[in-house]
Amino acid sequence: MPQYLEHRRRISIPDDECINDDQLNEEGGIVIQQTKQTIPDRNLALELVRVTEAAALASGRWMGRGDKIGVDKAAVDAMRLVLNTIEMDGVIVIGEGEKDEAPMLFNGESLGTGAPPQVDIAVDPVEGTSLLALGQPNALAVVALAERGTMFSPGPIVYMDKIAVGPEARGAIDINAPIAVNIRNVARARGKDIDDLTVVILDRERHIKLIQDVRHAGARIRLLPHGDVAGGLMTTIESTGIDLLVGIGGSPEAVLTACALKCVGGEIQTKLWPRNENEKRVALEEGYDLDRIYRTDDLCSGENIFFAATGITDGELLKGVRYFGGGAATHTLVMRSRSGTSRKIEATHRWDKLMQFSLIQFD
Image 1 (cartoon, rainbow, N blue to C red):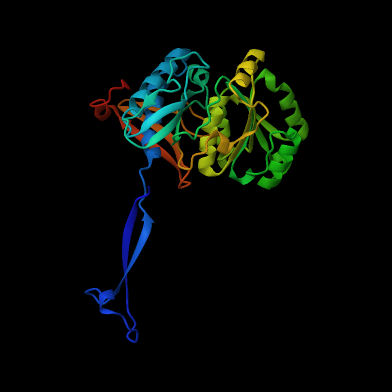
Image 2 (image 1 turned 90 degrees about the horizontal axis):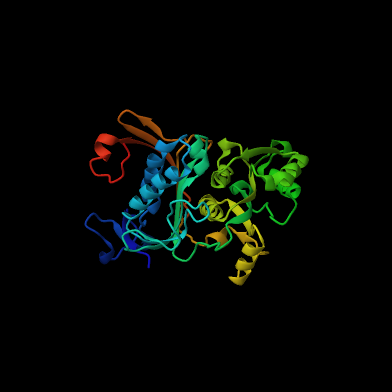
């Protein structure tokens, strides 16, 4: 039930207009009562900034040290600790670790203080564990929240075929159409020539034919070693030069990408992609439709979605964590679907202050 604020405003009265005494205030102005002006509710997105900052600060110490498990554990421990301080009744729908067999925030785990609101949570404490372990670009700490029961759970299927665009090309994509058709339609929607268009694809053997088809269509390609949440986000930010994301990537990352794209008006279409006959059989037994197109609202149907991502290593989207003698600096993207607001926050963290109360050993 929304809260409402009674709003009163005062206007002047023309000399020749008749006004009843009960409409006048002490200053001789009319009092007009207006109701149903909604009070802004709590912006959980800003609280999520602390979550992704903590994960980035803790895991950033492991950059280039070659230890994926150490990277994940540092981020998971920090993210869990801060999520549990937020006034919410949260349940993880999209967790981290099951696919990678790493330390995890597991599906079904309850987080927060237990007080309302009830929310679904999607997390990727380090999107690009290999990137961070090798000191490569575009590693992010990512989290999203939405109303309870609105996030899609991909169950046993850990991969999806995807196509995603930013708001300017919304409505121009069709995952069942040939890639050349999608490229042509996105170029038209973006007001570009085809050879101006840049398509981002994960650099995988399974994408050899897709890459050949994109090249044949005449578009440019940016191959990513890891990180298709970052790739999806790039389509929404003009300065990255990315127009379209295509290819097969993680199912959890598809839900996180949908949350982000819904905040800014972009679009994603996906189809479940079983890796083998056993995965296909289990999915069918659990009632999943392998021919269905899962669109943005199918992946997250919420209307009050919160999304945050903090850079761990430098990338097109965000700067990575910068450590200095007495602290560190972070760069975070935070968005909310209800307001359509997107913010970039540059923060400085001082160890002499932070370590007085933090349970996370940042320094």
